[in-house]
Image (tube, rainbow, N blue to C red; front, side, top):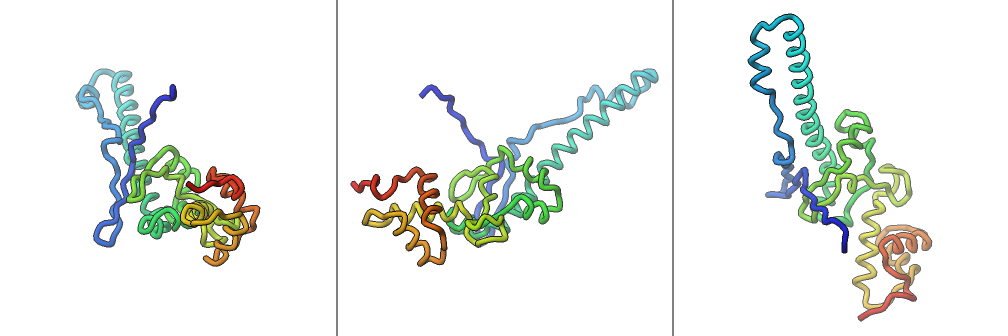
Length: 212
């Protein structure tokens, strides 16, 4: 392949230790920023009105920028804490227990705007006991399409369950077989929805699947 290999470095780690979740921000990924000693020295001296104004203005900008980086890190931590609270079953038991969750749910919990949560979640990765996931992975609608207020089953979780059903069954299963299997688990889906999810999983229909 001629594609460039892209390595993902997690921004956050979430580990289950002694029955509780530990959240660690990857400090190595945060930029080391400080104010030049030259500007600090110039700010304590008198060099004329124009020079002093220039120094003070740029010192203020630098301090604001450093503070914004710190606040972003703090907000990231708060967002991850809130996600872990909403998705405790996932972090403890794996992907098929991912619950429906919206940006609004987390925004309300952290007390920030939804766009802030969206911006924080963009291109951020979290390392879990189940692998590395993009932070956006944890935001998913319910199978009823009503955000987090619909079914308690998320689309991602149901897809994982469908995948396990297909892989674990000894016999070839039709979409109706899978639909009936899900119903026995308390997950009610239309057969056409099951077919759609199976297609998104890149798993062929019963007529195309072959067992080794």
